Image (cartoon, rainbow, N blue to C red):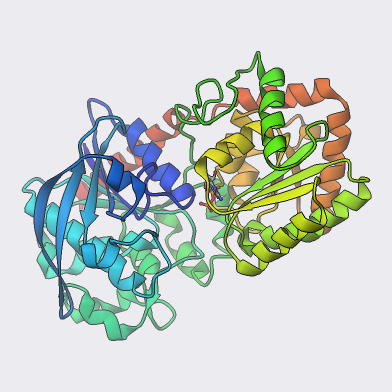
Length: 476
Ligand code: ADP
């Protein structure tokens, strides 16, 4: 079986969040003697591009309405990733340092999708599966199904995985001419909410729709930024498949990014030493419990609650705690947190920015990881924290609900129901009580470290889904 994964991010080549972790891990665990797995992402002007070797396997010019963009397909030449990585180089659109947030993002990602299909159709052999990830690749199933130009690709079975339904890649019908020609009787397939909606088009046209956790699949039936009724309609071809984590990379025993490596037997000492280093760097007190938050600073993550909850928790608990935040996003939240770090020196600190190494050190050196998310399609942080012996404190939503159970129910973490300051502070109080009893803490840590979050467990579910949709197509 030949599988193409197509997305905007792939770790370690380009990462903003969990999408990269999944596109960088699932293909690796899917690759074996029976499956050939290739990953395609845009070529960004970043360190990975500069520090790794690529060979050009194809070059051409793509057409986007009246614009023509030369592009090349470059193959990464090492075999260290565990799958074949191809990057689509469209210098005019992607030779920039960031992945998103340019005003021509629609043109950028549409061109990426067109270039990818132009290349695939020119290769001669047609893959069995095209697996699209999020709205940046949502128009691929539509183009394969309806564009005259891609008629030869029509038999490929397609899957779209929803990593986050809040973002949908909408644009006006004034840009309809960007899409390769198709019979206009099908134009309504592109439409959702009076505009072209890339994610909706992908959901309508793909043979299967997956979400990154079973609970998220249930939730998007009543909360999906306007797509609720569409998700209800396509329920028959949808499946929630819980993400795994790459336990080769996320392994405290061998992780080169940690100050001190440790395993289940040595976790107490190992975590203490990592915590000491982390606290020294951030002017925190290693003798007090350390609560951390890692992630994008947006309301969907509950990041807007962090400063108020920190102030309340510090005063309620007589400053017997440390809090560390690592993230970036909403500028107001960033400013609030920065101010707080000045007012509460020694108790609260923040690192505004993206730092992969610091994230690893924080998972290892913290006692508790806070995730008060309003929306969490899967969430990987809680799984990383468990793997590193850090107890997750999560709001019961989406994938958090599927992976964390409260310690009072014999689970592996601390759970609460509302994304609110009060609920966070109550959870912190419960955590502190737990912290007084090191043997209970150790038991929960070890339970978390022993939990199987590996991709091996999940890969088979995807392969079964691919087989199912291929069989269905052959029957029709
Ligand atoms: P998202 O919704 O952002 O994709 P996930 O929980 O699925 O959330 O994945 C988040 C990933 O991004 C994790 O690997 C986490 O460690 C990483 N991450 C988030 N913010 C930062 C940051 N500021 N610095 C380093 N890593 C980060």
